[in-house]
Image 1: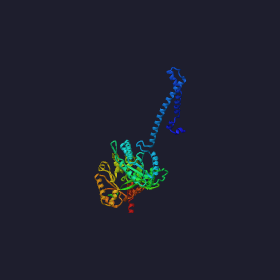
Image 2: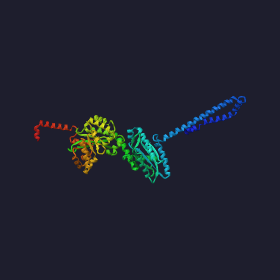
Image 3: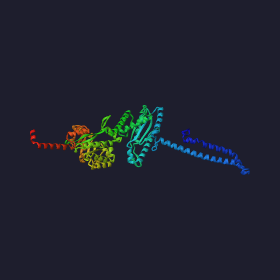
Image 4: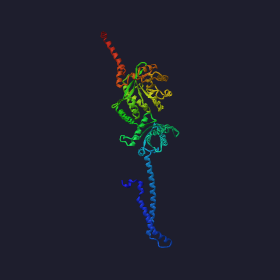
Length: 555
């Protein structure tokens, strides 16, 4: 590329020497030839003198043509320069700003933040970097359409401009994620908190979008360079600020959304551990590291074993045996819970086929799975391929599933019950189920959350809650399961409330499939055990009839 090309098209056009040379030459020729030819033409016309030299006249006419050509070329060149300048300005704006909200974009935000930071540091100020993520924005798009979602983003950007000082930089980093940078006095960091708190009032106010009221909440992360910035994994200073604000924003999401946090170093360690868990979970699902454990379910009145609840465990090669309280929420967030659950269910079907056919299998279903309109068909397909009786399966869903799409949940429950699968409402009492939902949705069983059961140790007002749930179950003709039975006092209290099914550590910890197999073998509750026992009795009777004398002698 030569130097002319490096200057750009506008600079090249502005220095078009050919056009300039044509114009200058035409003017000089016009002066030279015109000064000689035009007086002769005038004398020839008015005084009757001889005509001027034909060659000079032709030269004059050619010169006039060159002047006209040069002028037109100049006009065209000027117009072209103007249009190119406008096009470059538009391209520059598109490269620097978000076309939807007219905020800065991620790339330009980095450069602008660095410039503002240098300016602030020169004046003894600090810089706050604030990351904003709209909570549950996907639901806004899904329920109202993307056009409404775009208008919500525009209004959010405008409310940011109206709420923040004029010297603040505002950017849309992508999707529903915004950020702003704000100079502040190093000794008064509370000013940043005041601005952030004001945002919850302004942006959190309902938005009127084409007659529809949309409520928006935010998770916000805040950091600053007031205490200096250490290098983070080779990132630049501005990138480090963005990284820390993002970590603090993630902390706000984790703690329940609609709140904000300042960055703390411990958050980064926690996030690093979280990333390690995500990687391990993805690998573990593929490698078969997740295994089913089984917790006994007992008829409290008779004390008989009636079934097992399948519980997931992660047998990690680096972390050991990991509780589902740790990995289930992460698996739901990263989108592998369905695959993980289906593999465990298929394995549980294979394990339970070895049990006495009278024993049931309970399986917890994630709310994420209940959002899949094909979940019922997938579960029925697994039952068919595993050749497992549907009437031995009981799936447990939580109350939170009922509020996302009651119609779809009702349809799935009906499809499963029509094939013989039992449906249990898990953790009852911790959500917001209405009596109308309990009456209209075809549940087969209510399961009382362990938080209520554990309070039976106090035996004061807490027992009244469990009494009320049991009475409600009886009134709706729904059997009750109590989970979290951990001592004899709780068991005695529950026995007084009627016929219940229960589970808990009082009956033993969850066990592996092998441990359950050995337990059932000892008690004669494996599939076919009854037939084997009957065959052994028949064999003894035949032997006694064939050799009575010998049997008598033995007596």
